[in-house]
Image (cartoon, rainbow over all chains, first blue to last red; front, side):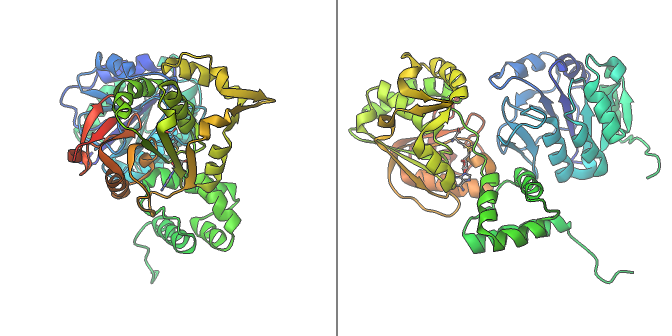
Length: 196
Length: 278
Ligand SMILES: C[S@@+](CC[C@H](N)C(=O)[O-])C[C@H]1O[C@@H](n2cnc3c(N)ncnc32)[C@H](O)[C@@H]1O
């Protein structure tokens, strides 16, 4: 991963524990920016980022419109806005929900794939709908690395299963294995992809 | 060996040509909109028109004004609510209203008012604070179709439960049903709420300043602009505000990365209320 690398993570309602575990496994010096879609209620406030901060060594905050994407920070999509990756910064949008979700995982992942191609690592965690499948497929198509939580270790396996079917991910990992994998990728170990 | 080698992703070129054509033909300037969301909207439009490529959309849009009207509707994201972000209105009552009381006459501009929910929320708030009589509200949007809807002030009855809750959370104390009459599945807002409101089309990408204001609200509009266009709009706002005039942005917008930051001072940091100080 180079300077423009970015990790994008998606979890739906009920996937909060998975996000906490993943963030808990990322060390203070983790070199990439991390953007997270956690499906949430429209009216919910900043408390989610405080909650996640309690589990993370990296600084966690809600992304603002046109905020510069900085390495080693965790950006959470604010309630009721889609979060998109642009050239060097985030953008927000209130276009219609995707899979009844705003923020939606597909929107973040597709924009990241479009903006940063092979420098993206997409991670789909526990969840009970299909959001994230299309997005993860886009990440992989643009040369990025696609990771899915092993459905057997997910509280809700629908989202991981849909992502596996749509994206043929590079890695299907138990929850505890995802953070160490991300750290290894940052150290220069890229998964070998068959047939490419 | 092919003689003609593609150097730039074709879609980028197609997109630039579409936006250029739309601007020259219709005067709507989307060339400095934030790219990621713009691309999504354009692919939505392509699908809705039953087309396959951006070039096909360009062809259709340039020849067919009805298609252009639909495109503007797709590109202008009109999502809004009465008393959206209730805590904003509480902060506005606490921080902005006392300043507004010191003015004999108050001019307010809602830039990007969409279907008008924000405007009626403000009208209700001013009415309750006893400021409505001395206020004149200018409600503008680039999309004429939504400005017309704003002017009509008719909202779906099924949203009223949520809006009533928002109103109460925003510090409202009257029965919210005083402000509208129900007719079938519509809620018709009391026409007196717009007796001091002027509705008109105005495009922040191409139009200039048209008055001097004490308060400007531009919430969830500049998120669709790139930083160059944001700068333009902010210049317009600064030039259109009286000294110590108030600027209100959306919940996740700020002047932080802007060259205009030094001209403003925060009135309420959490709710993105600013005051022009030079
Ligand atoms: C999401 S709505 C915001 C409505 C309201 N201010 C709110 O926060 O609830 C965005 C509006 O901005 C308008 N808009 C987009 N570009 C514009 C431009 N260049 N000039 C004026 N209005 C614009 C759109 O037509 C749309 O109605």
